[in-house]
Image 1 (cartoon, rainbow, N blue to C red):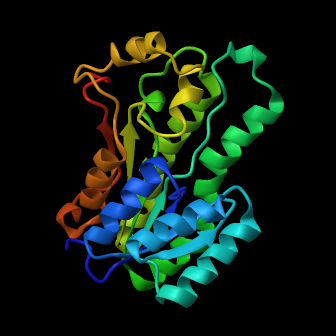
Image 2 (image 1 turned 45 degrees about the horizontal axis):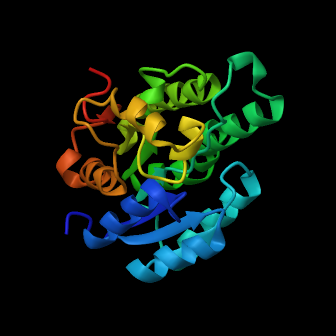
Length: 246
């Protein structure tokens, strides 16, 4: 019960890594808002963990503001924020990615961190406590070819994590990131371009431990970084990657 008495917002929590984080937080005692663009998926996870479902478009300021107000109304305060929602573009030469795809990737992966910070950081600063966790990627550390603008968005997130950590430390707010390797989530097929045994084998060959990451892997790491056990840890981008970035 490392998070007992804590309240948390997890974006993109209707599936994949976000769902794994939401489930783990709940088992550790937190009351969790499952925030997702897919309202049905949010309700499904929220019902399983006795949490709160909330529709949100993390790339839209008004939607993020509404999510924040709902969280305050339903939970009273926001102790933990996990910026997990993310998208990618399909693998292609960098010059062939459309402007629309570029805008979407940067809006969901980068602008969302700015928007949640605008609305939630002031609340944490006022209370002199809080933890923010950004789910970045090994793509921001060791990029794969043909995922250029996705790689760049995750590199941005890692840098944002570090600068947020420096600025918010005097206010008692910690900011960290997780860098998962490709995992068994809905985005896996998009990363690979196609889900075939050959493409899976190609991806797995770059992961020394020999498997993809799982939502449970991310949940375990997230629970630690957001708990008081990590009270001296801020500005870290922890690789949950089975050794890929070594």
